[in-house]
Image 1 (cartoon, rainbow, N blue to C red):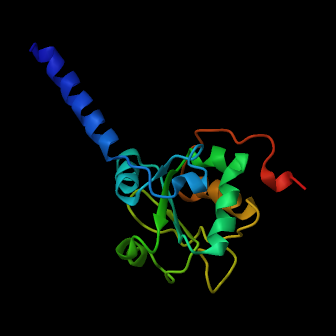
Image 2: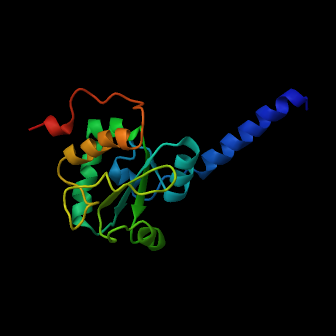
Image 3: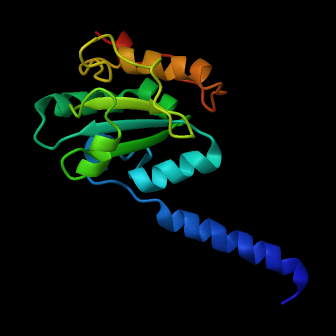
Length: 173
């Protein structure tokens, strides 16, 4: 093999290996997996560390009726567009108990939404309004999550990759 091709072959192997790591988590389809690129924790954390993109990690449980309401806001066009600037990780808190405990700055309640930088630090600036459950966000409207996603650009020093659509579900009546 000519020496000029060796770096190309190595790069292709690295790309294929990284792609093989990327897995869609269980229940992603229930959380608008058709439009949001959900990752499992392992591949998502790896992707964030390699790209520098921050993580939005959402913890849920299959039995949780509030989680079922919360997942509907991920169908909002504004949330879908904004999600492209983040590595989106979906975690079933019951199935992944160790991970659930490791990322529980204020408890293991669900739903819980964490904003995490590419070095693994949970942001204390990107939280909801409930002082008892600060990582619990409004579940019936996308406004709070969308505002935090926009605020994250400043907190994490991000440049948006996508422009949000002109209207979002927050404007609907």
